[in-house]
Image 1 (spheres, helix red, strand yellow):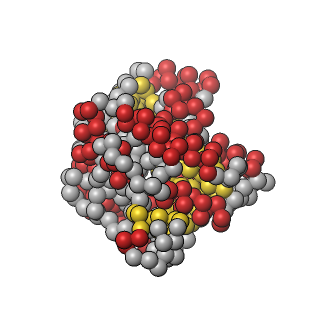
Image 2: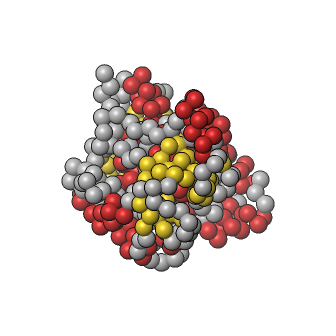
Image 3: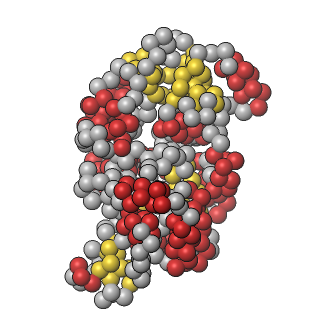
Length: 401
């Protein structure tokens, strides 16, 4: 019997993907249904719903759930949920009690069908103020919400596509069912998830190793969704992380895998969402460091720590709150604000944005910032970029942690 944490709000995963003859029949019907185009963010949400990552949801939220999630971080029935999961459109002809085919706008592929139970409008600024704590259009998450269609559509979905993630990423891409089976096979019961959209530098490595001291293992979990300008592609990140694991971690203590969502950059609220769906993946803990899921200066460095204290027992998966970590010359090793007594001048502060900047400019990376094997992979990637791409990295890569 599995000793893993249960899925969120359920005894088992709620998997919405159809297979075999059922999928074939539904796909044939979908070809004759009205088409509803979805964005990259919505595409990731559909795939996540399909694999059970958003258990126990059965589709996109209605207005009452949207309002309650914005205002209270719970759905109308009281289930904890920190960020609205919604689908929008500008199509005035789509009506309630109508079945539609959801089509990904970038590939024109039918990815799901949906029975529309409600069509409603929302206050976009209210969603931005409650979820993102700002309405500044420079915030990438705000920009996405403000560019949504006029109407939100609610209703259960049937997922017909894996989004191409298994064929593109192979064994790196794992569903909640697969990670749970992996953990059970290893005999792990406590697993900490490490969220990343960057290659791992020494500070990231240190966070993961702290978690390994506490838990049976760590899952390094990379976003495989659409990237921001300046981000490093998933295949390069994966190679760098694999090299780090091979050379600097004890065997059978780390699993590297990926998930299909785009980042929302919602800071504290996204940290809660990260913990929620990691519970569905079987993780008992989420590593929460400085400015988790933040962007720019919209959130305080430890707002994502503090928000977990506001939710009582809404989540089984708990945070591992870790202070700012860095290399200290006097300590001659990695330290944190809680363990190092020395001055700022003795500390080498590490960040993914700073590393991207140094590499894009072909500048020297200070000793103890990143492992040499990782740097070799990243320098090879940056040396292959065109000058115009390097400029884009320089302009945009510094703004997100």
